[in-house]
Amino acid sequence: MQDQDRLKDGDRLLSILKSAPRTVYLCCGHVHRTMSGLVRGIPFSTIRSSLYQAPPPVPDWTWDSFAPAKETAQFAILEVSQHHVGVHFHDIRAHD
Image (cartoon, rainbow, N blue to C red; front, side, top):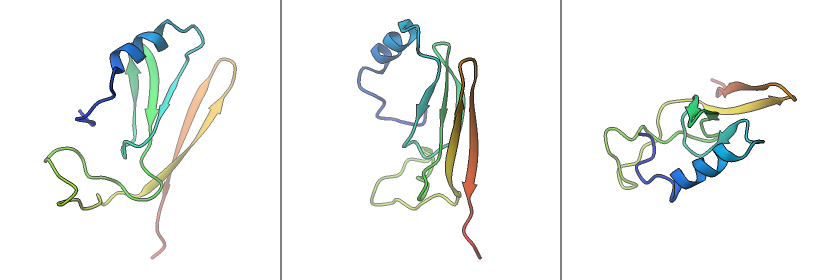
């Protein structure tokens, strides 16, 4: 699990989104990881931060032991049409 704290009432939110006929895709941020998949049959994507990446949740860390993960920053471009959602991920590499 990426987020140990989880979203308050997340199951309720997903039920509402699943029942909404116009929900076609979920784009989520602030998880510092690139992930895509299905949740309750709804496709989703997350992206890394555009600044620095938090380390994975395992092993456990606290803000006192925090050290950014050695992963590049990232942004994404969404391509949305009437019948298609495309997500293009782009890493931001530092110049040497």
